[in-house]
Length: 356
Image 1 (cartoon, rainbow, N blue to C red):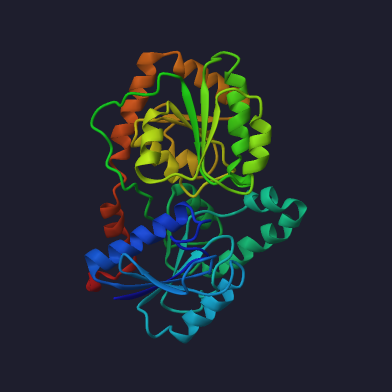
Image 2 (cartoon, rainbow, N blue to C red):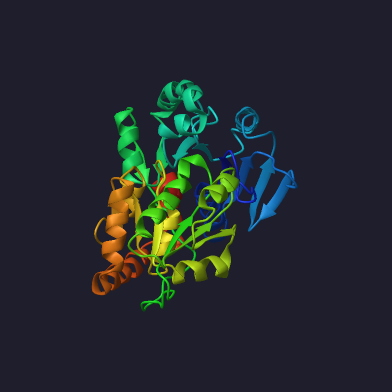
């Protein structure tokens, strides 16, 4: 089977995130297990190659993050008969392949509040147009990563929506891991307005009143980094780790006591599952995506406000038995997030029974 995936960014892009990890892991799995030929068409980025093969997946890059939608549409239109499936990945805007019979929509989340959070008043224009454009895909087979997004799509008239959730590369430990001696909170993600990293600092400021020795680790880079460093200046216990991956990221998550996830909304929140695999509960807002990935009262807590978050954190860190229960729940919960399983689910969703 030949598959074309159209996405704004790809796994090599420094600005990529959970959506790009998801896309690459699925693509790689389709190549390795089901012997598919997979192309990913995405935007160029600094020092990136125009063509590259990563883990057997063929990457083609053209245009910037705006014009790539035009170039991707033309590429799909020109090569529509060369591919069995064209997967149109919608990130605020898609690639307009809804008129092609072999088009499948892949969407992690609706942008909604993202637009005004990032663009202010100017965001009201794309906020209005996003559902109008999205509705053009309502008769296409659609794959998403959470029940929250599935419900939002069905409210727009979609009727063939399937959930294939995220996963993590690392298999969780079988036993509770030793945490840092100092109560440590961690923010993991791109430092941008929609992730609200400043709220992680505000929550930390509040809990310092009850737990003066507490630490906050901020892992990631992004346009808000310098502003956050100014905000945290003079606040004892804050460490900016920059971008880390692999064993370093795993080690930091294992040592952390809690993950703070104060985003506007998420597709699912892959960082929540990464933390769970390290036995680290998450505290996040009760918003789409996070209310899917965080099991309230079992693997963490959903918060209504900064004060609510601080109260929950202080209470949890002060109750050793409850904390260990949530940590153990996290390890068990994360075992269900296996890429091999997700690749099988994705394959069965995009293929007819007679092609399996």
